[in-house]
Length: 153
Image (cartoon, rainbow, N blue to C red; front, side):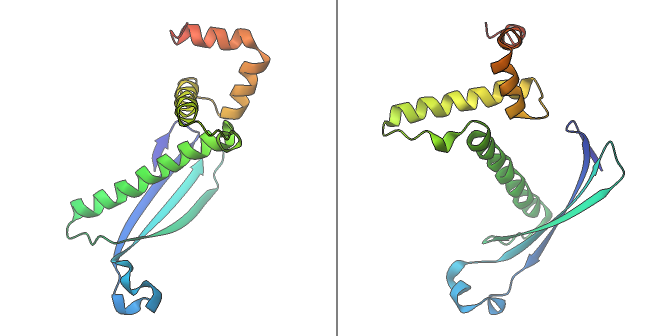
């Protein structure tokens, strides 16, 4: 299992399966589905021995013809979930969906500020990003110390 700084060990196993167009329901015939990808994740917390297993399935319209193409498909799945995590943090932690403006320039500015905030918060490696934001809000001197340490101020 691979070690991660988040307090758990993870192992991922990927498998590709060719999808026969004959196996698809009529409504999916023209979708171009060619490959089923199975991702199995095994996790173990560092402070406990319980293993958890999760299996996810993905469909693709590409058909890998060699191991490198399969690896590229697996990397695309991993990259997709990294992007989803960022969007989740932006919305849940920073309340992105709650701010509605009709100005495109304000939307771009706020989006850039949220990205900057998330990237800065990651430097402090918090276990809980929302709790870290609350900590900075409640203890302004802690925010100033952090920003000074990170050479922002």
